[in-house]
Image 1 (cartoon, rainbow, N blue to C red):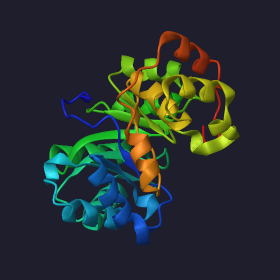
Image 2: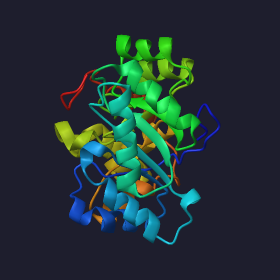
Image 3: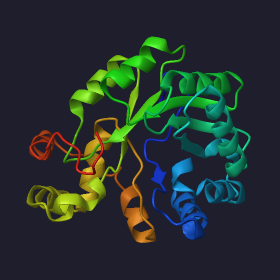
Length: 262
């Protein structure tokens, strides 16, 4: 998918939230072996160093691996600059493909200005937001020089965010889903509608759930420590949900967070 500055981002990524640092490198190398080319980490996850090691040691050219990370609790311009430098140092990479501001905190506009400056220096290929809604998003849009490329928010079949996606797209911002499988909440993997559709296509509930977002052009970053699940989550390109499937899936939307965020 092309972002608003022309940078291309792989549609299907691999997320490393809550993956312990001691196994992160191995998991990322496995993901890259399977075919993932977008790895999503964050300072908050405390496994950037291992993501960087896997990226460097994979044998895959750096320009073929898209690395996203996030800064949080930056507070102001100076602190944000330090946070960005720290991310680069921990990753051990010359540049970050996508840097997100993890959630609103402190002087959001100042933090975003720091991100813009690092973008202009060529240290970051694209910048964006995570968990920004309403007035917090409007504040950035009213004061930014560079429109955010991405807003990463909770999005899955139980909170499909169609209205938010339309709003973001009207501003030139791509919706990226964190927790595209709803973190397994509300017995999603035993949902009768999803099980029926999965059986129809000879796929799993996870694959149907991810395919639904993929067909809507939502970026997805499923997470698993299990190689079989990693492969399953990546293997969603050989089938298509039809209009009836999509209508049934959209009846599941609860229009609220399942995971305690906005």
